[in-house]
Amino acid sequence: MRRALLAALIAALVVAPAAAACPRTSVGDLEDEVQCLECGVPLQLATESPQANRERALIARLVGSCASKDEIKDRLVAEFGPRVLTTPDDDGFDLAAWVVPVAALLAGAVAIGLTARRWRRSRRNGAEPTPSGDGGRLDADIERYDL
Image (cartoon, rainbow, N blue to C red):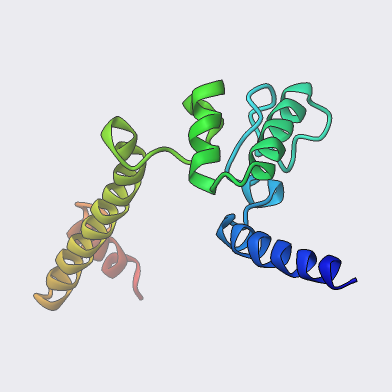
């Protein structure tokens, strides 16, 4: 009895650090960051696709072998190509996917700010825009019909 208890205690002491060293990753944790190549949607939305099932099986095998999230993504890219990831890398040409939208938003904000500034300046200087170039003629017509 003591030997069995001692063996169980030793096994628990050996297995516990190994389990603690294993990263806590799950298939569900990766399903929103990986897409089905057949459907073109995140893996969590691809329910009937054989390709999605192959990707899920590979992720489950890698999670079972204690692979980290980054290791699993690297393996998926090696197996299926870079299109399998839902977000582009943050280096090289893929960096443009992050920079261009931000630059476009900033350029739009600057354009709106400059236009508003010009408009406020023209209003402050008293330069009222006329509806047409015939403002004087309109005034003359109105005076002619006034009784």
